Length: 173
Image 1 (cartoon, rainbow, N blue to C red):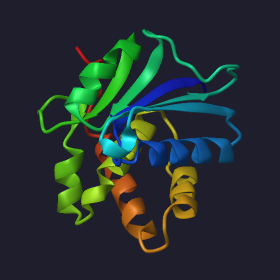
Image 2: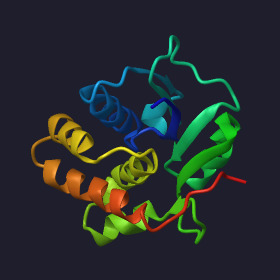
Image 3: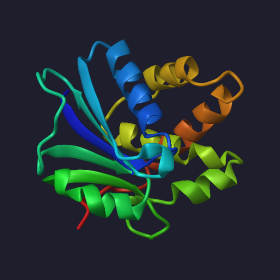
Image 4: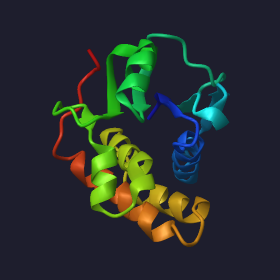
């Protein structure tokens, strides 16, 4: 299994945390992982882009038009970074728009009483679309989360994982 994944958002939205969960979970089941991050004034709400490759790759950089997945914490970040997606790539975007590839992760995070869990809802959704089991990623969440947030973070991830079975993701137009 090989994937090129771009994760995009603003500083403070958990892009690096999502990258760590994805990398730890995949590595724990024997998948080679390489990643890199680009921080654009992240502490001031600037763009943060993480590029993750799962599989036998030699460079962490993902050229335009070659990503299998784009995970974006907002519609704006999805639009800004869709250039990375290959023509049949899948985008998972935090947006209330009622389209198959958009997930109202912010609204759903409010419903489960974990407003900061939107990023993990998106990640759970995407990881299920990649065909992975949830267990190694739940273990990574347990390992990487502060103890007081571990259960809430796992709940958010599982919520995203479960709703992805109901939605059919499509490329971002």
